[in-house]
Length: 207
Image (tube, rainbow, N blue to C red; front, side, top):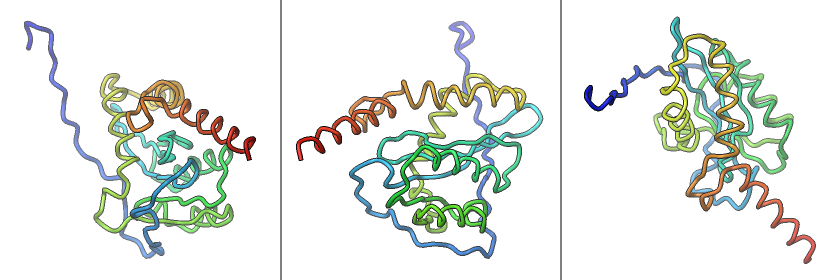
């Protein structure tokens, strides 16, 4: 490996971002076996950590399951509810929330009264994974895996400022606008969204 200039990837320690030891209400899982036909039907929310020299930075993200687009995100130094609320407000500001389901794990951030109030105030139905069932949130986990492999592990951030500088660029310019998805017919999320809008407009004009 030394002769060929190959480096092994270091296995990073797992850090939990979910605190489900609370007495907040746990809502039913509404997305199990759900068949989607368009965007803004189900959003999936989750949190991941990014290692820096003196600790961790946290990224909250909301992904539209149908288009795979990251519709809301926030970066913070703590796992406070403010982190996920910021991501949620970003998503709501630019998207239609009619008949929308918001899905998350049982983390205290997603079940706290302030977060739930925002969902209810915007008419968003609440869906929460069953305890110990990570597959319910597979779409968010898939995005985080891509983020770590194609961005975080390649740069090895040292400071909070490094994360704030690079992550938005990866999400908005690379993942949403350039990364191809086989599930989208090898299109990137933003292109797929525009194609859906174009086809929907044509159908409306025909009717």
